[in-house]
Image 1 (spheres, protein in one colour):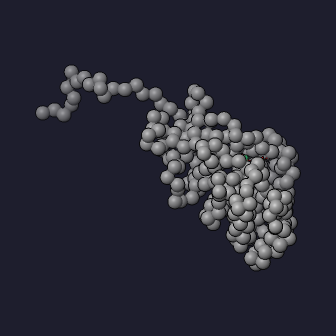
Image 2: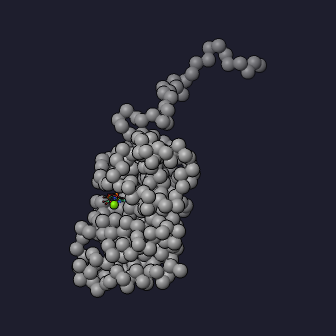
Image 3: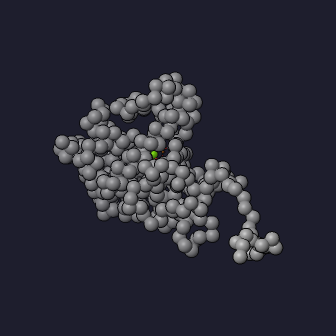
Length: 287
Ligand SMILES: Nc1ncnc2c1ncn2[C@@H]1O[C@H](COP(=O)(O)OP(=O)(O)OP(=O)(O)O)[C@@H](O)[C@H]1O
Ligand SMILES: [Mg+2]
């Protein structure tokens, strides 16, 4: 018997389907895109163990839900990553996408002090950044994103309360969306906690600072504006400028400033705290 299909072979129409080749680099028509999860290198994906809400399916689609807040050097968006039609399977999550802008470098004057010790090996990149060409600004934006990514991963691994870092891709970081009752958590500065909660909030920030300094790290821009109040729990955000306390010549100055920003806010609300005392306590655990 011949194994050749007989010439009268007809394909059952139930097995036929329209096939359209899709390029994963293409944006989809409605402005969404294919999930970039598998397109980034493994080290650009969040640390394990991963929370179960992280969507890793190749079939997922990323859709921008709108801007959360424009900032000095970056904008925060809400982004949904979901496998179409999978709502009940849980393969759908809303995250924060923090995107560093390449074109606006008002704050990159900070670069010199914050990035001391951070090297750009490529001399063409270095020249472009110094001359502030469009290309140079995009290199700088990518470096800020990378720096914030590394800081988030480090803090997460130290068990500190920061948003879980999902992935970094060029100038964009995807991270856990910090919410209360389904809404974006307010910044600490917008809250008026009663005495007991106020004191608990302070203890949480003090613990955060103690662990960070024990590991020789300084947030560098800690203030009630970069802390989110998720109910009874505080979550620290905005870490691209995290520096090394010892290797960075201004590390101790940044730490004192962080202590001052935190203590002044709590003191103004009636808590008996003092930045010099906190700074002293932190410096004592640092070495
Ligand atoms: N993971 C998050 N969950 C919820 N809200 C967030 C998150 N990340 C950022 N936001 C919101 O977006 C704002 C800006 O984020 P962030 O402070 O990281 O960026 P920034 O560019 O430094 O902004 P700014 O210049 O206002 O400090 C935050 O104040 C907060 O309201
Ligand atoms: Mg901020």
